[in-house]
Image (cartoon, rainbow, N blue to C red; front, top):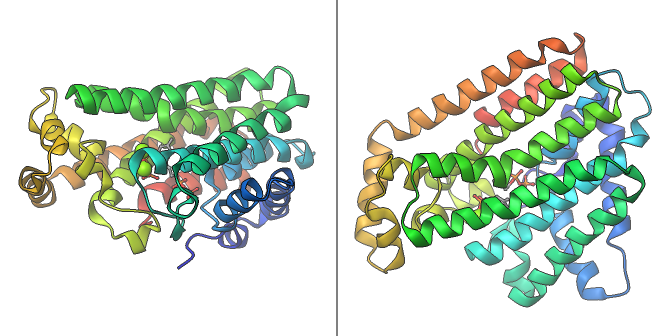
Length: 322
Ligand code: IPE
Ligand code: IPE
Ligand code: MG
Ligand code: MG
């Protein structure tokens, strides 16, 4: 099953469809190399599709503030998506994910060593694409740093057994929301936005990034691997994600310890409690209110179809089933 292909994305956002196609082409061009394994593994993960949310947000942010030379933002959008792609390749090593984007993950096919190297390769290709962009490099670099920090905080929190809600928000802010923020900020900056508009776009990106990860965590709990196109149920099994934070509240309890052992019972108990109680509804409400706030921030952008499309993307993140 190949889910969420880039073609679907093109069909629904005609305004940036050509630019998204150019982003696709550029990503494939930059991973074309004579080290066949790197080329094949990179193509494997890129061809699988994915929602292409981050480049779409960058392109729409650019267009929404009145940017007209869309080709100027294409390499940056491609760099953002390659960074995200690198992060999921590495993520599947860390999380032992064997399905990604409806296909076997890179580690499932080529093994951990080559998945590590493929992720490294994709990350380093970001430098190449960003080289002409001078000061904008720092924005994406900050997102990359945050991503690694977030992933590290997460692994530490699981290990230390302090996966509280507070820690959870710290983690998802860095591992996920920071890149959404960078995508919107970069699009706006390149499009010639005012400082006020850039700040609004950055805050918009960050908040919808938080909402996106909360919903992603809900789906990890409630959806099937087939539906989401990636290994489901890993968070609970590994003592992390929204479920862990919810079970721990402000006081970490048994989740982390339980996940360290093979005793499935405590985890099953937590899952039953979560699914029966208000946790899922609460998570969806939190995500929804983050998105509503984020959309309100777009008021400082000129009214128009691209601003509407940004709001539409934001809302789709909390409605999604995959
Ligand atoms: C997956 O992101 C990683 C997270 C931050 C949860 P996406 O759900 O955007 O992944 P693709 O690109 O569509 O596969
Ligand atoms: C993804 O975290 C965050 C990244 C930066 C890759 P998850 O581990 O929750 O993402 P999925 O659910 O595997 O895509
Ligand atoms: Mg992970
Ligand atoms: Mg994962």
